[in-house]
Amino acid sequence: MVGCCYQLFLTMSSSVEEEYRRTQEERRDHVKNLKLEYEFGCFEERRPESCQFLGEYRESIEQKFKEAYELFRNNCETFKYPKSCWKEAQYLLAGGHGIKTDVNKAIQKLDLACNDAKEPMKQSCRLLARVYYYGDENRPAESEKAEHFMKRACELEDWEGCWCLSVMYMSQDQKFLGKRHKIKDPQKEKKAKYRGSLPVDMQKALHYGILACDNNVVESCFNVQRMYYLGDGIPRDLDKAKEYMDKGVQLLKIAKSQESVQPFVGISNQ
View 1 (cartoon, rainbow, N blue to C red):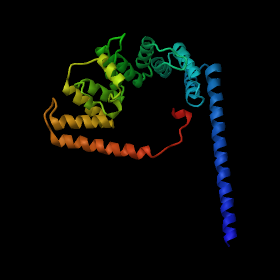
View 2 (spheres, rainbow, N blue to C red):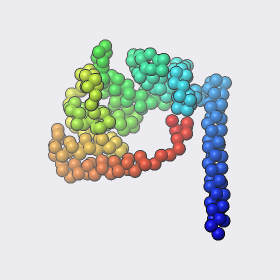
View 3 (cartoon, rainbow, N blue to C red):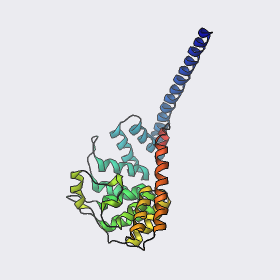
View 4 (cartoon, one colour):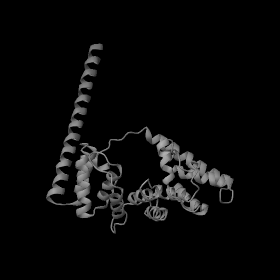
């Protein structure tokens, strides 16, 4: 009886392993077919969306960053395809992989993507605003342009853009920035002196902060909670403070529960 059970276990294990191998092989074939499909669409049919997908394939699957950059660059220059302009700009800002950093050129590409008539890239507007807001040794911050493009991002329903805009209207105290944006590195701290500034306007800060929180930007909920709790530039309201604290805590719980889930990510989700 024990021998039969053990044999059954071996048979089941073998079946599971075979199913796993077959699934993995199907996925590999699917990915290869995607590459062929993207190459044909880009080079033969000259479809900009296919060139974008091919660039993402080069970047995320093959890790050929310079080739990916060239695809994004050509797609932006040839077709003014917003997502490719946005991707090209990110490479130009970061540099590396044989690509020279060029902030001015990146600004041009981000502007194209942000202001596209058909498919404006809201993320591009936010990134462009940040580039204008944070200057450097050779380029002063341009706060009014930063405000304009962050408003544009928020209008396009980039909720993190609304949160960033809210922070821009607050004081520059880092307590409003959230853990993801706090400056800890001394080198980054040094660069902070090139940061732009807007006149403090807590009513606008509250307006955009609530807009971001209502669309699930957790950091913004805690900012709004603090404003109401302290009466920071607005009438103090402890009930509102509790409401936004509870909202932020709930969003954190949801985020933590989702972190434990690791879904299969295909090229189409990049």
